[in-house]
Image (cartoon, rainbow over the protein chains, first blue to last red):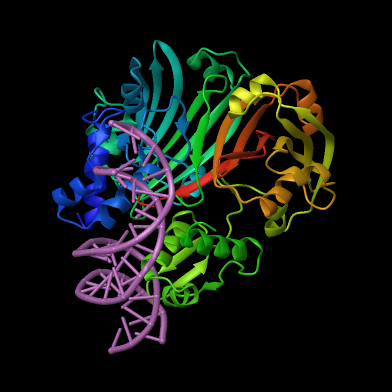
Length: 234
Length: 234
DNA sequence: TAGTGGTCTAGACCACCGC
DNA sequence: CGGTGGTCTAGACCACTAG
């Protein structure tokens, strides 16, 4: 790892995301992390402050630092992971891949993303189901030039988003949020009325300038909202 | 101001937001800000790093720090200002206050916000019009206990959001994004078809724990999207 | 009241990159 | 090459609050 604070942050994030440190778990005090990593307090403080600003942990004087309770609402502008979120929230979750194919990118998408037309993309359509109710429909393009191993991945254990998050660290991301009326096909998939308002979250991620993936995720508008909480200081 | 880095950040943000430092303007070097505020380099570095993470400025070694180019799309999770955005984008803009009244907060809203029921709120409904097309309908509550002078403000020059941004610095904010179908009243106001999907942005802001304002802004879903761009480290 | 996090200092070395 | 930002140190004092 290049920087010490990156390594510390990655370690803590991994322990939280894996469930090894569940919500409410007390995180080592700053002086303990200082000793563990052999660094100064400023360094661990920066890491913990950043994680707190991102909502992953909660810090209170005297009481210490604990893993934050997962919100049942999604934070806008964070890379989301249905499987992880469901595990943290204790919800039954499964997914179903409805379509899979390798296709050259079409002109419109190439323009949108900033790639040359014809680049080979793995195209996946996935339905995310929680407690037996369809909660989201995901259309995803994965750039096989950046992530060639995705072409051989069956996506049986983890949905594409989770698999990608674990495999390809992203360095830049872009989110777009829109509202659309469900067409009949979408309504059928999500078990909602045709014409219902849906929230569409479009996310594109890059790794060091190389395009990784685009996901268009459609949520029933009456069951989902995106939430962000923040302070100017961060 | 309580903390030095807050004061530095507020100064810089104010200069950027007011247009005194336009996009591309070079921001003083860290050592210059150290001298100006009589503080250590770590302090100004924290401020500038935060502003860079928020996308307000761009930093490059050797080249220095400059005010970032504004995006033509709205950033989710930033306090938005129709008037300012329109000016920056060169669009004709005006607004119309459709309703104004002082009312005690109802029980549901009090619960939602975390206030005691009956607190006096200034209630405003505002239509935002750009190039003669209604682009957003805003329903806003302003806490007269926190901002008493709002009760006497006619809101002739600036819409309520702009006026508030200039007058009351916020320390915490929460955004909620949802998708809803337009009812007939909303459809008429926004000149769209009844049932059209609309994006609803709900924003609440606090100043040092005191509730300031809640705004529910409804956009035609086909004409607006919220965009955020970010990197993991911040 | 004692222990925690919040902030700040006055240095330091290094990587990057425009000149 | 030199100047910039990125990171880090080894302290310090203070604010808050649980016990």
